[in-house]
Length: 470
Image (cartoon, rainbow, N blue to C red; front, top):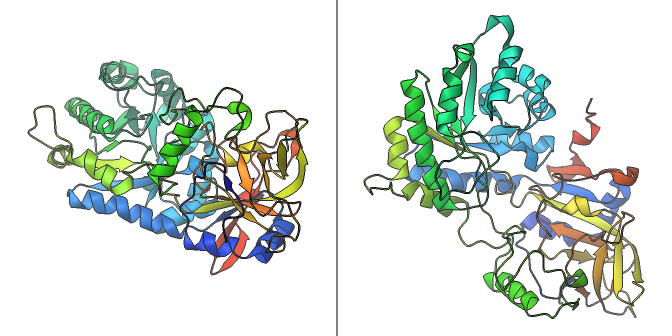
């Protein structure tokens, strides 16, 4: 049987076995929605071990000291912390509550790093009290950290976030250049306050070449810090480790070519002819690259094998020679295969010009990151398990609960060959990394989605939904 739902230009998702088993059980999906509401986030962390192993194997092949820190901001569940800890990973935290929860779950302070873009005084205090490494971004943070450390002036272990001076590296809002950091660290009021144990950087995008260049720049900076007496132990290259939602490049490239060929106003592929930021036939930079050929292990291998400017050493050799550990902070690529979101169909109707609309009990922030759209086909689960007799095939758009005209769950047009109706369920695949939580909103006082995790074959509440943030 053909799929009960697909994009007008299909973008067919990679799936995990647990996802396939779930969507093939309509009764269970209905029971979960009935018991916990719509939308509902489901998690199975089994794939995380595989994703971690892929990165570790690449690092081992180059003989480097290597550690992975799960980017907690990518998924708020407590189960994600537990899964990372069970695999011997650290956790990268971006707020007071993220840090507090990790400590409460038993993550060792030495397995944590605070990378928050803006750090509250409470966060600084909690990190200092527990001797958790802080990644510092600017001179004002250094000043406030000095105030928090208080009269004891006990040295605080930190990493300093490096902004590249290389013209081939994109500009960034994060960090300071090496010369600026050396000047800040040399100031008398900072003497004895900071124990710089790492160099950290944030690089937008997914370029292995740029990361290789910036690791080399970080190692040169580490040499300068060591000459000032700091015992630099690691370089942390942050996140941006690529993954692929779609198995076929042909579908991915074909979608953009078809979209570019449509005349203005043609809604056969997207709502109101939305180009999703593209200006030609190439994929738009406004969306995540949902198909990528080189991901995780092979991508990391390319970085470690990259050569210095004079060609004499690889990045891996330069790390080994200095005895410096390489760290990374993946979110999406570690959570690849770990999450799925269910939403119940609330209604079907027509727009005033007769375009079909399928309304869901969810809002557009509950399956979206900063990308212009989530370019992966959902799966339709019929309420009775089978197409209803006499239903008419429809072609239209998924709309959500916010009272605004542009409240689209996804901006692509979808086909429903066997029809769609109230009480059916739409499954959004592979949403565990960023797509569930990063911009979720309870506007209109609609409740946030509940989060379940699978334990020993049963779906149980994760616990994060019972945490009340003060």
